[in-house]
Length: 446
Ligand SMILES: Cc1ncc(COP(=O)(O)O)c(C=O)c1O
Image (cartoon, rainbow, N blue to C red):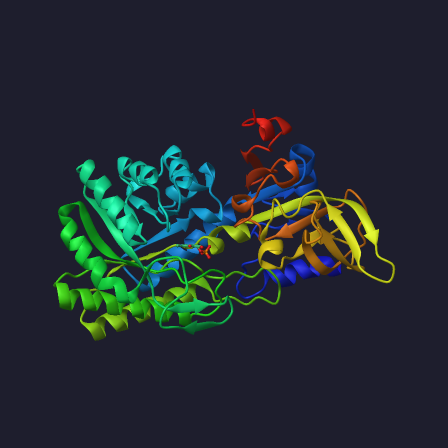
């Protein structure tokens, strides 16, 4: 029962981030999710198949809500749409009282079509077009997070032409560089996003001159993603609050919104040990309280924008094993029916994942294999060197932690249609995104 053990061991991992919380194993040795046998899901929906567990998403969202509630009165949690942008997930997020961070007209349009509470939508991006800004303003998007001078000018023009007051945050680059598991503080960040701190006065003068159409509410920064340490978050929070103090002293205006971005890491493998959401909430809110006291500031509204830590652990991808190649005295490749186009993270970032053989959870790990995709690239490897039970074709390989930055980063490379995505809850499943067809691939071609 070693493979089974592995699942249970990992579920008991301190952070509990890797697996959907409803994961189980039934009497026939099959993996179950939300009480559903994955072999049955595959019969109904085919493979590859993205599966999102609704309870895990709700659990993670509640962890953010309850942790922040414990330590701080005034906050808003935005779901970072880029992690997985689809109507059903937006509806869940809205229903749970979360806001939304969008970065494009397309994500905004999806939010509008999901009837998302527009006042809770924050629009990011380093090159928003005039058309995108029009869409945002027309739909009363809660905040525009301004990234650069070009955007400020476009925004002022658009707001003026529509006679609207647009509430904005300014994205700052606090000079904190996170190389995922380590970080440094630098004077200037070599980043395409946001304003360097030395331009802040120029930005403030622009806004003051723009008059009543632009209303500055606060500052934003996002220092990176899949971050395991707390210190960079605390440091960037302090740096932003120092800018609040600067504005108060120099311009006699007290800003009210502090948006510290997303970025909390999750466990993709047993070796990963991220901070817990509660630990993060406790330290960040303490930092804010202490720093505000020291600087003589009122406590601002705290805004954060988690993506990965909300949705990644809710998702699994089920693949079917096909061809198997044993390199003489070398690696054994198990090829599955998906790969780099439905999960571009391994080939793009050398991201690591964990998998099990979902129809053989009662069998022991028997061999070291490499899970390869079916795309025409040597680098299309989903998992290098993993111990699994002996695999034959048609076995179901289940990869964990695929809820974030998988579907949203997927492509039709090699003209392969995207898989379906289903949502499961309480022994029920529903399609939330249909599997693409060959006809879909040709739909826009002349
Ligand atoms: C501005 C901004 N906010 C939030 C996020 C979400 O980050 P994560 O999914 O790591 O929580 C990102 C991710 O790149 C981002 O760029």
